[in-house]
Amino acid sequence: MKELDRAVREVELNLKKDISQEKCSINMSKDLKPFFCDMYHCEYEKIKFILLDNSNKVLDYLVYEGDTFHCMVPFKRLFKHIALCMARSIIMIHNHPSGSDSFSYADMEVKKKLEKAGEYLDFKVLDSIIVFDNKFKSQGE
Image (cartoon, rainbow, N blue to C red; front, top):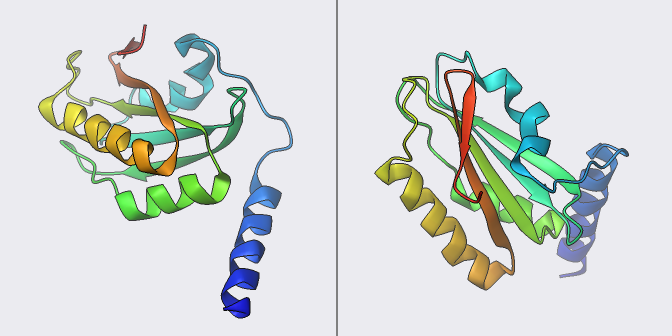
């Protein structure tokens, strides 16, 4: 058991070393623009999860890439990372290469799954944002 505890602490320390020293605060969806400006002209679906502390400062972010129509979310890995970073909230950003400005059924289902997990892992989903045709749309604003 001591070996496992030591390994977990080592992983936590390595994560903290990799995170940028310059933490930016997220107060509005427009503050997220640096995180999604690379998604405007992407030909495949990409999803980013921004992990925040209780002051809405960025702890870390994760990026997953899919194909033209969808992107699979590896929930176990995502939840593990949220727990290791001790994130208090997350923001989900993904693009719609098709140009659609509507949240799809799949988008809503991912958000629901995140919110349900947040009840148990003690984090909140602050927003879900879609990026399309040089624009973005927030569910939270």
